[in-house]
Structure formats: C-alpha cells, structure tokens
Length: 374
Image (cartoon, rainbow, N blue to C red; front, side, top):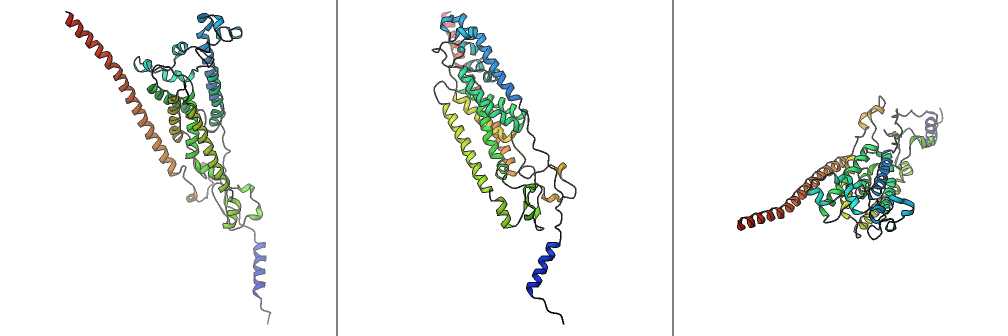
C-alpha cells in the first residue's frame, strides 16, 4: 500500500505543474500607426499677413506728408512709416481715416452701403504696434499647437469663421466708431480649445494606462485579457496597481480645464476696458466654442481603424469611433450656429430697415412741402 498524499503535497504538485506549463501566447494585437503631427505652416502665413498689412497701413498713412515730420512719432528712424501722434492713436499706429480706407469695420458702410467685405478685411488690420504685438504673440502661442494637432484646414476655417462671427456681433454693437484686429479670431481659437477639451474628455482622462511594452513580464499571467488598444486588464489588485494614477490624471485634467476657463474669463474681462471692442471678443469666442464641437472631434479612447485590426480578432470588442455624447454635442453646436446666424441676419436686416425709415420720412416731408409751395 502506498502512502496517501496530504493536501499540502497536492497543492505543491499543482504549483509545480503550473510553473512548468508555458503561458499561452496573447492574441494578435493591432499594428497601430504612430501619432501623426501636422507641420504648422498656415499659422505662420497668417502671422506674416497681419504684419504685412500693418506695414502697408503705415505706408498708406504717410504721417509726415499729412501732419509734418515734427508731429509724427519716430520720424527720424521710420520716415514714411512713422506713427500718428499719441493724442490721435495711443497704440503707435496709423490714423482711423487710413484704417477705414483700408477696410476697417464700420456699421454704416456695411449695412447701408453694402460693403460686407469689411467683415473679413477688418480682422487683418490692427490699430497699432502694441495691438499687433499682443495679438500675434497669442496667435503663435495658441495657433501653432492647434495646427500641429488638427491640421491647417480645420484651423484655417476656425480662424476665419470665428473672425467673421466676431465682426458680425461687432457690427450690431458699433455706433459711430470703427473696429479692427484679429481678436475675434483669436478668441475663437480659445473657445475651440475649451470645447475640444470637453468633447474629447475620454481621451485625456484615459492616458494613464500602461502599454504592453512597459508591463513587466513577471506580472502578466495566463488569466490576463488583452484589449484592442494594447493595454492589459488584470484582476482587481493589478488593475489598482496599474490604473491607480487615472484619478490623479483626471485631477490634472480638471485643473487644466479650470486654468483654461480662468484665462478665457480674464481675456474677456479685458474687452470691457475703454476703446476695446468686447463684442468682437464675445462673438469670436462663441463662434469658436461651437465650431470646436464640430471641427475638433477626435475618435474616442481605444478606437482602432479596421485596416489596423488583424484577422482573427474578436470584432465584438472593437469600439465605435465616437461616443454618443460627441455626436450629441456636434448636432447641438450645429443647430446653435444656424440659429445664431439666422438671428444676426434678421437683426442686421431690421437695423437696415430702421435706418431707411428716417430717410423715407424726410423725403416724404420734402415732397409735401414742395406740393404746398406750388
């Protein structure tokens, strides 16, 4: 009769057998392409265009010829390109008459004379060197990063349409002054940054997971399940070990969101200072914020294009390209943009009609007076 084995011997033999059994190979993983970064070239072109427009405005202004060399700032060094006196333009730039001649936004010229092109031309002009420097630094700081991430087409559309939205709201608010500057377009980029962070929140909130290459082999067991994006899903203890930093990463994202909101509020508050067109800032920001939900949507975290999925992979585990709330925000933003555009068009039409009523009444009174004299 052989000696019966104790439960401890059986358990030791099971562990010995499990140690000698090789782990099954993981299922084939998708061959993901490297993240594409666009080369930014359109934003530098915008920068050069704004600089060239400012230099041309000084050339057309020709302060020494109109006011005399002794009245112009820095005439000794700049000659024809010298600035108007500070009493006329404290921002070191041309005269308002020159800006109006080159395409500054003026409500009467747009509404009554039909010069709608001023809604676009005004975003390339600047009131002075200080105005230009502040806007161009913001353009390079914000625009280069966005163009690297999303490409020239989407950022170009975002810049121009946001500038147009700022000009439209400014045209409603302006009375007897002119408006110039790329502030509306720049506030559109800021608004788009905010909406991009919100609509793509799942991507930024899940960037803390470890990749397979970074996972120690000793921690991978046969019970591990592999997902489509190259991450491992272990038991509860190991999930806590690997993904414990997601809460910390989420806190970082919330801090980034709060910082961005603070910067936007601070810049909008500057728009309420005297001689600053706050309407262009608000109009550009709202346009960019809504356009961000449409133009800057990324695929959700874990999505892989079908051409990168190997044969034999379980198709049920493939994620859809976008989350449901991304589609919802896109549709809501598109509807809001249409409503705002129609509303602004109606307001401009009504303001044009109100402008024509006094002219019609004056002409009627003139005809009545002429008939009474006869």
